[in-house]
Length: 324
Image (cartoon, rainbow, N blue to C red; front, side, top):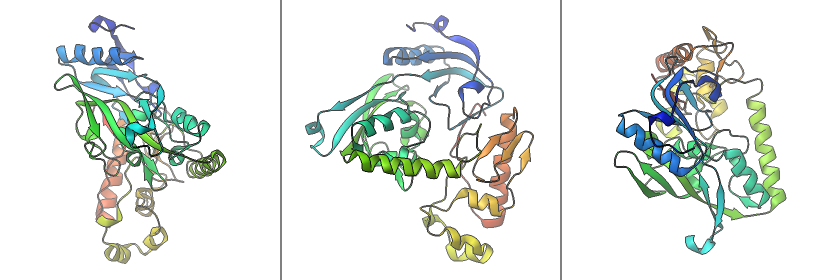
């Protein structure tokens, strides 16, 4: 593909099949790109037309409005990864450069094949590397930011590439500068891994996949956990214990689970249209049968309202809302 003008874009492409939610209306314009040059060219064309841009990766952490997206949706398929000479980064472990459209699953597999440790937590997580960096994905007490050396990005506001250190990226829990500034599009990322024992790495990955599979049993057509878990530092435990004594059962968790609060608020199995709060893991909203984005949004709003009223805690979406 060689993008030069708007005529190189497809029009009115339905986005629902490209997301794990299987929900969402059409993109006014759409391009699927496999090279960095086409990725950047598509941004330039959109800028000249004053079109908003949304970059779609694996579609696993997004809810697209029923009306779709009125600008350009770019499906990022820029893939590839390479081992960088260790001395470039102080000789500690091994450094990899990974393109943003690469799947997280392939990166995890590559790490295992080469006996690189540091990505065990990511085994079984869907989506792309760019999406994982943007949302600072994580599990089992680890996150993407633990590994990142630097990120190459494209700043659409000025039309040029920039390189950001890990500190520049301002990573926080499920948050980054890329999430706060839609003009910054991740192109590639350099990460640091340790050389380890292949059997030990594989054993830990298998263990993590089993834990994930157990917690997600029976869940399909969802966007993953809908809300961020809550950092304990922002919780008045003693006050919450007076309202919810059962909080003691999750005190050993890395974060206060949002699903636990939603369940205790009595919302397990709650329906809105054909969208449902999963009864086994209440931080998942699932598309039961051709649910609408508005159904999901209403359920998420209900969760926020009831949890705030009962426990004084504000739930913050982890899923990206597009077109609302």
